Image (cartoon, rainbow, N blue to C red):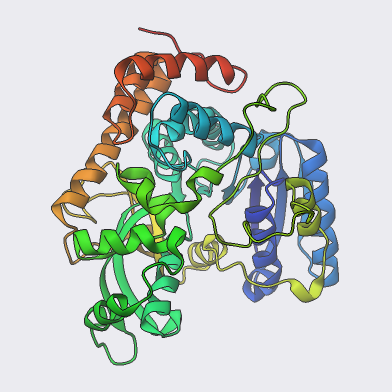
Length: 461
């Protein structure tokens, strides 16, 4: 059997690390046709030890022969790896609450602050240094390995690593599959019965073709009919904006309001849960002070957030993590993520098609720069990963919106390399959710001070 080494970097990550480990233990090919080594790496010794204990219990319960070990040493973990699966964040919700509140305090209309809007730019700059450290370590100890990324902001980080290093990197996200699920609900069909073509920017993609996989029938006419009849307020936080964008642009977008809405100026009319994001009482609370709580993250107004009893407990990040790490063999199931299918296809030289990956465009989506990272369908085999060219053009307004983000990507890379607040300011002022010039300058100064322990040192140059 061929040896294979997979490094999970950021192995303390709850969702993606545990999902990847479940996919690995369930893979018959990796069990029977590969001598598998799994290196678990995290900068937090407590977190990586927790994941190691979970992984050992799970793999032992399946009598799986993989060699699993843990480390806080990045170079040791990556040495000789064939693949690195990366999902990294530090104090995610603590810093995300700052990304959300501070720009809005200075007049930005951003609705989420994760992948788009001014908040996402600080998010990018925080994660870019560690991402480049991983990639440059790979150049040294495993230069032919694939860097499989789940870290957000997906497109911004993948583009930076692809431009600033020689490492092969792909970004993965399940947002398009969320969109297929929404199509299925409108069409009253199972997602697996629906064929699609689509793409764009990560978290801002559009289905340009929708068809019945069995008959080949174009399903957009039926979708138009069903969408008109559907309750206007149904799942409003998730798809209210999506339905409006479908009416504007003629194609249904994915993955949903609080993601697509990060890239347009008119999203807050369609996000009822906006006022719930990291909600706090400014009279009684001073956020981010030593000992202060981080407000609870609320994904949307639905999801049982608003119909709790007066004295029902609120699920904390700690309780959620505790539940995730309570191993139960009966609950081990495929994650539906793409990392392990990609690894199998490349390693065994199979050919598979994937619904969505993030890679440099290279002509796959007409009208967008070749070096900009986009998201669309892909073919994976022993030669690597290649985007499939879209056969339908995206609307001019959509291409224009994505072009703005592509320019922001470039400016953020320049801001990082040049250590320049001025380049960051240029990026912020270009964004559809930008504050005024004076507000933007003050916002940059406050955020750089507030996050100085984790942001790169930037100066006005």
